[in-house]
Length: 469
Image 1: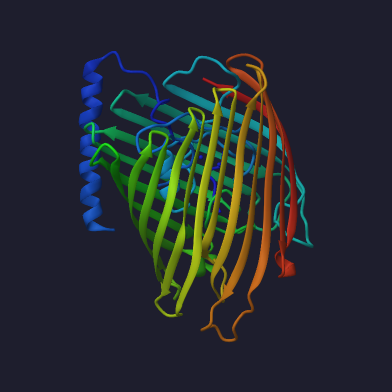
Image 2 (image 1 turned 30 degrees about the vertical axis):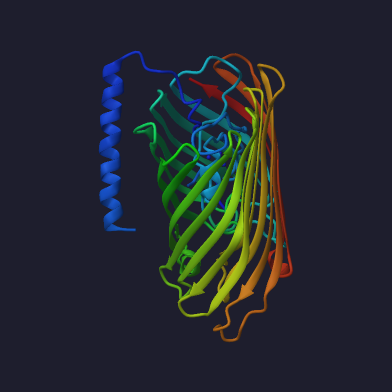
């Protein structure tokens, strides 16, 4: 599970910006992007979609996406946008982060700086069932956001730094880290050919619940990246393909966890889209995922055979569904087969209301010694409601159900078990003026498990100020 916490950057092709007035700038950016993709192609030959929210049917239309206010933990939410087909074809990585919505509905600019300073109380910093340690905390976060768009090229660049400091000495470190950088690029090379990339790099503190992978308790700092590159081509009026490559990597500072959690996943995918009607596209998809661990014997290869549909109900409501099977083969511990389903529904009512609902069922990495994998159902909803131009609220929640599968080669073998996780956030903000705003919120986490010592609950309340430049 993961978050680019504020939870994450992306941009819808239709909402990245206005056409630049300086043609020299457009030519410069186009030439720079061509050099960027040439470098990517070179790197791809040497080595081997992280996006989630809205779009129209097929591969060309898009719409606005949701946002949510900041929270003082590594599970806080953020705005995200993207194409529907890309979201559905992703490997479940977290969306790239876009900056918070600011302190109110004011005129946007291409470059913005967002800052928050919060204070609050956490009643279970160490995510422990019995030895709970509570502490007051101070949290701060700064995000720099740049967007550019014209009919052919869209770019969003995002970087942030933040953290939480706990005043009472608690087990382990008494701070959380949240550093991130993200880049989203889409370039329409011709009426038929579209190139794109999304790059997300994070260094943060567990836990996080909004995306596959990772631990659901507080186990120190880790590095995470998910980078996707794709090429979409319209072969005929109704038929197009989308070929993609995704790199995902985890690396934990704590070597005890890294021994069974540090890994790299390379995923190659190809979608075949048939535009049934202007609002509906049928999709067939194949993916190949190769998982390589640093210090573990759980290396595996997975084949996905999927079918699905992308549908645009109206300009503001869209949905995507993929379903089929995944066939996983482990280098040292047999094979496993499972149904695989993922779906995304997005709704955007102008700047005032947005909702994103993402669900997934399939095999994930266990991240526990003695276990081969886990079969997981996860679902999450992100919402933003702007009650007025000054008052906005967010309600975000995630639910995860895991069935852990034993590693048959373990001696002695560990019995399988089930686990349920819930993570919810409620926050509200008030814009005093275009520069200053106030925030208040509450965050709740609960883990229920067959293994009693893994259970815990956690409550966090916070309030503070925000600035937008």
